[in-house]
Image (cartoon, rainbow, N blue to C red; front, side, top):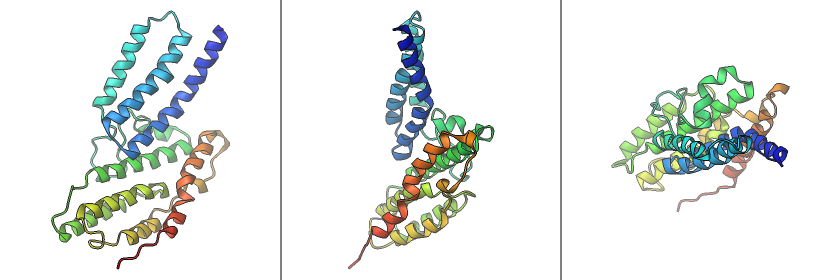
Length: 243
């Protein structure tokens, strides 16, 4: 039984970092502090607290719980997105307790696969910030045009424009259009999707990584491939007619 407990504890610890990485998905989809704190708390207790208790049953549970609760409390006060300005896409834009936020500045010491992964995910956080800073409504089409121009200037800045960012760019422009309130006016939403498709062309699935980048490179290419391989087909399947 002790060996079985130790095996299970080690198994959970091995899964801790990959699962922590997947928590970033909640930030890309909906960066609300409560949502991130909820998932982060579950992660700390299941993948940190439980293995520690299984490996060190003599440790007092109340101290383990206290430390994990303090860590979870920090996740509430630390925003899922950083406070850095959106003017530079190379800033760290994911929160300080997210997987991407912790390892982004250390990416130069990691494998090539991790570097590409962290840069792409940081770009997703950057675009998520742009979405969050949209005004609730535009008072005129001229204001919309000015905001669109500034947004376009920002989106053209990244040296590496990852195709995996296109769904969030679609949400950004769709939200911009809804803030204007005229589905026919302002700008052509679908033309913008095709424009950014031609700008954001870097595909992680096309890259060949050395053997020592595995297994991270394998499942990372699978994840990004879900977007890169299907986005064009999705655009081609959409037909919109204004009458």
